[in-house]
Length: 376
Image (tube, rainbow, N blue to C red; front, side):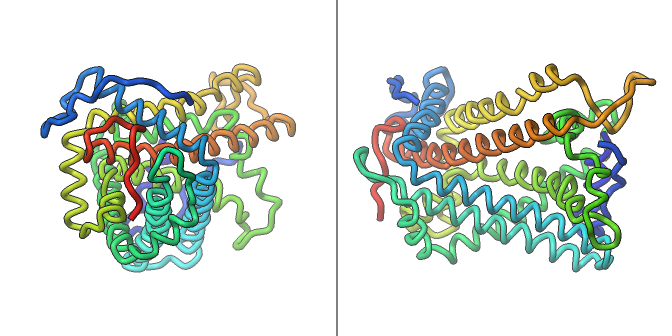
């Protein structure tokens, strides 16, 4: 699809004119000792280190099950990303109604990304500080949030760095993906073209038809819901994909800042040093958690098989008549949306806990789940 290519052209200084939207529609496991335990190199690969990375994900799941208060992190992250979706929609409306200049567009884009990233980084710091220092301890999430206030300055500066890196990364992706031949653009970073193709199918298209929104009053004759979905929603997905990659590449910065009180520069260099030693474990953990989310996400194929293919964006093969899903299917589709998001945010919480486990294991040589870092 060309939809992502169209909206990508409006990033980084270009006015946010919305693209043309076509009317239609746990358990405890015993793992072997890590390959890098007691070795400065470590993380060299092999099934042992891969199992250690998966073990960190399982240990994080067990910790979350035993400490339900950590689900506040899940809820708050969801609210932050919902706010980002509304903010993206607001920027599209500003671009459509006011036509701001390039500099203003840059400032607005950066401000929204910085505000969202700071909230996410601050919540991650609170999560790290709330993990109990002993196995028998209980997680106190809001105690962790209170403790994170001492590191607001460092966390804000780190958020600025991530926001700048995210904008640069997206700009690089837009530059290279737009220059690729159409037949191999599916190879571009994040595979957003394939994602939008999936989002055009049922059950994702159940309310994507702009005609369903035309009756809702909106500024300039456009529904406010249309600005939020699909435009704001798609940009929130792009934002999430880019910054998820940045968090995976810098998994130990926040633990270094709040647990060891390192300077930002020392935390960043230390994170890359530890990542060099444990990249196999980190990759295995991220891949395992990603597979869980993908497995839930791709269950849409079962829903599609039960309902039948329905793509309001085009009729294919020629002559095929498309129809809107019934109200019952729309309700089921909305529940499906809710389930996917809940799983994704819970997995994000497990990922944050697993990052702390990997950080502890990398600095102490103990395998994930065997010990916790003492709270300051």
